[in-house]
Amino acid sequence: MDRAQLADFLRTRREALQPEDVGLPRGARRRTRGLRREEVAVLCGMSADYYARIEQRRGPMPSEPMLAALARGLHLTLDERDHLFRMAGHNTPSRRPDTDHVPPGMMRVLDRLQDTPAQVVNSLAETLVQTPLAVALVGDETGFTGMDRSLVHRWFTDPYARRIYPEDDHPMHSRLLTSELRTAYSRQGADSRAGRIVDALLDRSEEFAALWSAHEIGVRREGDRKRIRHPELGVLDLRCQALYDADQAQGLLVFTATPGTESHEKLGLLAAVGDRDPRR
Image (cartoon, rainbow, N blue to C red; front, side, top):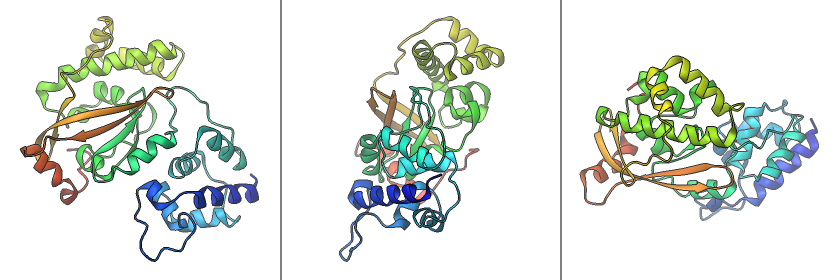
């Protein structure tokens, strides 16, 4: 671990970001060059004291999850992320198609959607980052580990994964998720994370095995409509619009509703309702 180089690198990247780059208000009396340390800590999901100690060359060796959070919060490119890992004494992560690294351009768009339910997912249906209103709408999907990080795996192994969708929509979601996993499998091969998820589901789910044997590719829902069941607000009829990053096979999903509809009014209440119970 090169404490001096790590500290200097973080400082320069912090000072290069402006509040508006990450969706924060500038404020009339702001004198700080770039972002404040406290702001970076919030963006990265860590304590201000922890981050400050790293910049002051006196912190502990950051873990790989902490470094990934720093790379995301500071909007680092892949090359900058790799440099960050090396300065902290870790091997660089692989640049696989299902990488956890969200590109800076997509993060900038997400930062400007803090008043909208939006989240970034990868090709394995793993949610990488969410806006607060996305957490309020569908729950926190970023805290899962292992194969359960993938919604496809949870969908066929955990009944709670289906709770946010009306039961009538379950068959379509099953077909859609299986089709998306097959696309990832065909691109990444059998000896990949996608392949391991497929093997696990073939052993555990008869429903998945039947759908997998049908070899459906490119399944699409009707339009961009998606119905979501909220425990406090009921069913919301939404539009799920996606912006894809072709190089990393990630998608930015944005949930909206037609103005003037009941679902549009319900979306406006999400902030007041707060985070939804993860088991409801």
